[in-house]
Image (cartoon, rainbow, N blue to C red; front, side, top):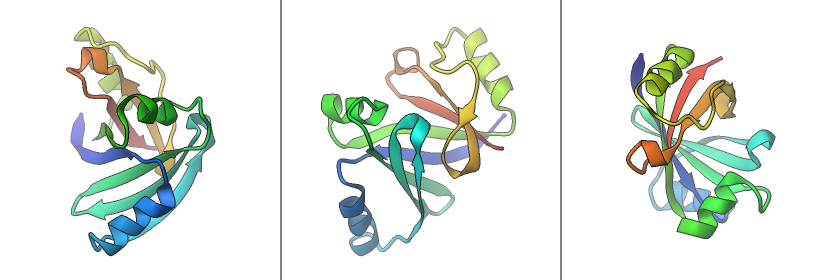
Length: 133
């Protein structure tokens, strides 16, 4: 079951510069950075109330984030929903005719299991399910 919006993923060209903006202009505190080698991305996390903001910078030109930036520019990349049963959520989405990008969850940032739904079957919004490992 989905329990809340976990985070908004935002694609950025320069993580360090964007972190400065979030800290200096918005007054938010970066509470962690991480590299997710499997997704070829560096991340930085902020909290805005109960919702996290995940900044995503590509570490390779063939990463999904690099491709997104090339096509769409900087901006919101995905919305992530926290679930207490990621396998069940994937099954429910699949049964409803949603195209899964990942049929099996994998290790993502912040010690979570994650899986994505294809935006062509989610009304244009790249959707992520995430669950603590």
